[in-house]
Amino acid sequence: MYFWRIEKLKTSMAAAPLTEREVLPYLVASIIAIYIALGLTQHTPITSFWDDISSFCEMLFAVIGTIYIYRKNNGKNGQHFLQRYIAINWVVSVRMFVGALITYYILQEILSAVYVNEENSALIDFIYFFIINVILYWRIGHHVHDLAQKNMTQENI
Image (cartoon, one colour):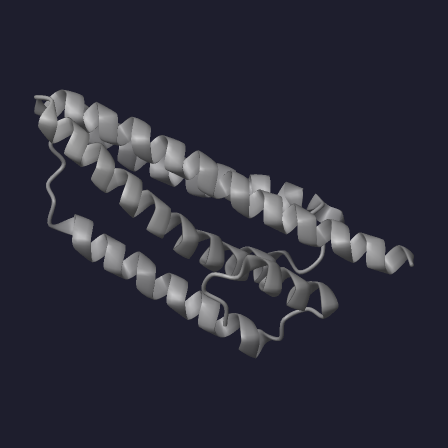
């Protein structure tokens, strides 16, 4: 199982599709991460209009992002979509989490140095996480597309 090295994962997946057994740890780790995230946010009450919008956008990102990634995998002509999505999503998400955590900490330090009221803070959080989601799905799509192209090139050789 890969946590960071996306190119090694893609090389492995280009050589041969992952088995169901090889995909399972990525799926289990993703499920655990989702439940941890839900547990951490479940105790935080929704406090503003922007929190409501953010929750709705998270659902939209999941649906639209998955369709986008499906298309980046060559749509109905693509192969191994679920295993690519699950495994690549895991590695990209781990990498994004580290980067997002660091940049969020820096953003919070800047905001604490400058007085920002709660409504503005919620708007800034919304914008920040919106951008993070765009980058996340874009990067997953990029790697899935790259892998799909490698497989098409190998099939034509």
